[in-house]
Structure formats: structure tokens, C-alpha cells
Image (cartoon, rainbow, N blue to C red):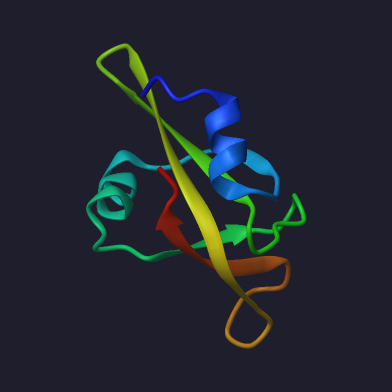
Length: 91
């Protein structure tokens, strides 16, 4: 998408940038706004304010989409070690 790391940092003001990949169908739902959350394994100490950069590979081209973590749910209803992150498009 041609977005520099500096513009991400300025937009988020704080937090960590995490690189993840996601199934293309689920990623499209995040991009169009019909999916607002994701259940992920918390192996990176995700925090509210962090940014997730999802990678999509399509027709030998790589696209990146940035989402800010706005809320984290853990515990009740989730398998041990997993969290549900609420996301909003960062840029």
C-alpha cells in the first residue's frame, strides 16, 4: 500500500507493530468492515494500542493492511492462551 513505518508510528502514537497473515476470505471481511474482531493466539503479548499488519498475497503481489487493537478479551469462553482482539482500520 506504500505506507511507511513512520506514518504508522505517527498514526498510532504508541504500541507495537505485529506482522501476521490471515486467510484471504477473512481478511476481506476485516477490510470491508463486516468483521470487527479476530481470535488469535497471544504469543506476542498483544496490547490495546498495538497495530497488526496483515499480509495478503494475491497474484504474486503482496498487500499490507493495518489494524489497531482497540479492545482485548481473554479468559471466559476462549481456549487457554487465546484472545479476542477488537480491531479498527488504522490507515
